[in-house]
Length: 470
Image (cartoon, rainbow, N blue to C red; front, side, top):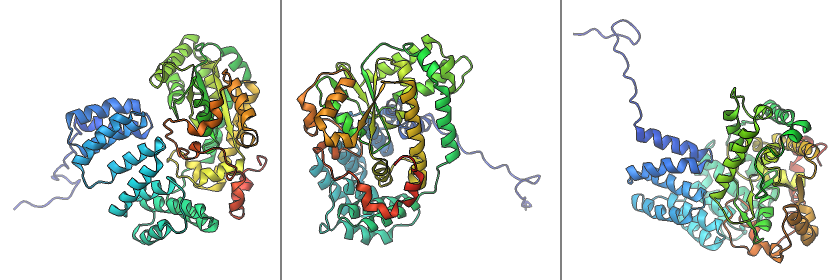
């Protein structure tokens, strides 16, 4: 009889190495990582190959649907939603993706009907409840709140599902004016995720950008990129009115609204590859050659043409491009930047009430949100000093007070003549793939102004953090 041996001792059998992932598995993982990083074009070729090789792999098919949807390829997305339904007839994910497309194109009632069907067939599928709460106004007698409260005891604390249910409940209570209950649900939603915000990292990052873009450098490098007036960058904090400003501009016949694009951020990341020593952004900018800057600019413009190649202006509405205004000015000295601004407390409260991606770590607490906001304002003040006249302030409150005058000023800034259609922006039929898709299809309304007062007694940490900004 063979004597047993202990792991790690002489005579012990070596543990078998895990099998190497197949080329298909590697391709699938790379495509999923690119999609999670909001690089759908990069993901698409990989995922298309995955589905072509294994058309019966349901996870690859639904990922292809998500990639097509992210690129606005609605017809292609719907084609593969049908494929996924055949593979997974009892899954809720196909209906969720279809509902997202309907919402993006303003077909709200059809989306709500589909989402209601999902919640009935799959009552514990939390994304459907979250999406349904955002797809329209909840009322006190429509049964939504009772249904969610009845299901929540079946959800486990510290899970994504519980987070979805809490956000849905917060939105519902806000809709019916139960603000204390809404805030209680909101804080419970935040508690489902561990804090990830690092104040020191934020301060270092913002300070590095300001240091890397002094006025003398911006003045020296402006014009080194490409001569074009096509890009219009709308920047600002999320929930500050960036989608509204884009919808107004996109209602002009000479403007195409491309939505939130990652291209300027990608140009910053790629700048390191153009530096002789591979110095990272933003420190690398000072040493880049005029040729390198031109290459980065032309690459951005080629990517922009994938969305539109005919309109005089194309709007890139990535809010956090506020960190890259200096780079935009160097690559495109003739392009325009529009800064969407809204009351700080209203902006931060609206952020706090929304479920953002993990990258928005500042949105987990009111104090951290205020800290991030203060650094954003300081950076925008820096751009105003080093780039006078380059950034146009589009105040949400000013637009409410005089829509025509502020719309005229906005169009003038981006070099366009007046067109009456911008006053009826809510009638413009286009895809809006942001959480504000419902709001931009309404006319201007003042009920969101000073909304923070409904939660005033809960906002002490935010007010303290925003000292000097409000």
